[in-house]
Length: 448
Image 1 (cartoon, rainbow, N blue to C red):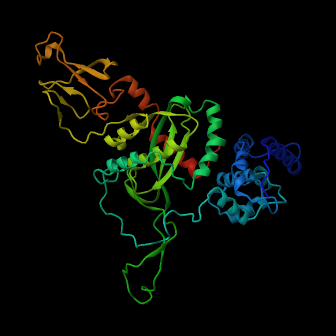
Image 2: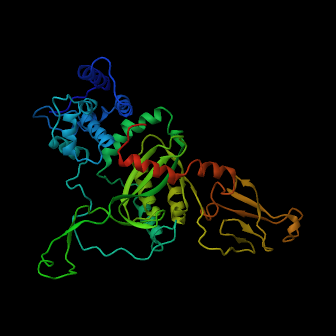
Image 3: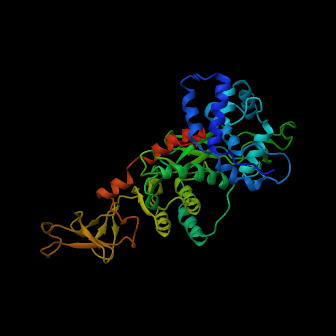
């Protein structure tokens, strides 16, 4: 049968009724229980029932309430994330308050198979892994390490080739396994935050993006598909079965070490004082931040329906000409820290040179000063002091730069201005992601 939508008010009434029946009218809990009770009490998850209704049959017994199933899974992640689901079912039998907060009667708790059946409806893929479990034997990790703070090396031109390919098919919507989960997150969580004004101006969102390592295990676990070792043959190159085929090795620049797992790329609402996450995406651990941004930005634009991103705030790891082209094509103004790859000046068609920071330099070697913006011609004016002597003009030497000529060196909002600093550094994007990685690990997607 199709599930019946249980209003959130009915869930709240059920919780109060069960708590009174089990613990009396004077309900007393330890302080650690109250944050969990408050989250479950306030979070209306009944929308998941309507969302998954089409995945249920018209025949058979009435299924478990989908809202109670996902609420129970969240309670499990809040309280016992190190335990398995089998143990979670036992814990709910021993601890009635967890079953009650989930929306189940302590005398009628779903079994393990019911949870896995629900997950298959929420994650509609035949295989839970993207890559096949049977893969070629992996090579050993690299022995050379980068300097502290340096990202893993990337092949030259990779971002440009990826952006060129993406722009050709940017309007093609490809279904992802996690679309239902994000739809639930957007409809039941983000929409509430937007209604409360916690995401900023929905029509002109400022989004900060950054990635951080998500470690899943110390090393890649795999089993042999051959009996070479039993026959005394070592170092064979046969395929192996990997327990987590989607994970690979990546470089953690902040800790200066390699890790196995994923690369969590997160978009957060930068104008919000709460730095709330609005689009999390797991990428391969070996993927560079710039590559993750290209993939995530297109997916985000196609799936986020609660507003329009107008500004993108990124660190110097994303400083690539192709990324500027992609964001401008999406009508998003990039605010990206400049990554000075070289200390030499850039020559122009005149005797003016451009510094690695995007500042014109007069023939005498002096940096020119900004002198306003010509809105009619969409160009920025630079001026050198008459005392410099690089020009006979009484006003001094002038030079114009245009964003369309080089959006990386001449962004729409100049980097040296107060406006760029205000927009680009309201918060630290990486600090936001590191803070939310802890919440993501615990699946704390309920509005804090």
